Length: 261
Image (tube, rainbow, N blue to C red):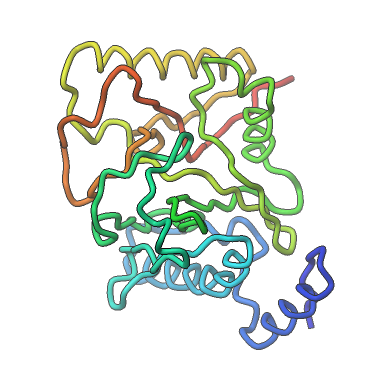
């Protein structure tokens, strides 16, 4: 029987027994958390269900850390919706930075598309929306090391540091997950003025300047890897009034290359 590696003895016993009962569905090899062929729908669907089963196995583990995972509704395995909040009296408080401004009214408007096997949305005990991402195994990955570096007190104090905030690092049996605020993609909504577009451009030029100064290459500057501190109705596009010159932007969901010698 595989003994699950956790600091708490009681948790180690509980999760070792749970792993035995479930057949331990959590891949310890990071490569198994990647899609092998997204064009083959049979393979794609099988791999998605396999990894979603792993996330379901881990659901009570994250709940014990204060995070309630979003749920999907069969037969739609790709749309995830917030679960009922354990503290409904706090669910509609306006989150403060670095959490996104909540611009939706009902939970059904906050659906999240399951497109990356390594990412799952959740809601914390204060009702704030976050995402949890697997970033490393036993050997610290470049992504983990760079996230740690960008979130040190010194680097975070740099005004050019428009990189994603790490709220918490969570380890499970050699796997390392990071918890980050959930933000919408930066380019989804309308720009009301040229100044708003210039502001966004300035933010991204600044963060790339910071990354290159620290010898880090992002290598994947796509819309889905950007963020604006808003969560709006995900079924609506090109919403107006989402931006002003105080709007925050960041780079997220990294594909990093460490350029250090």
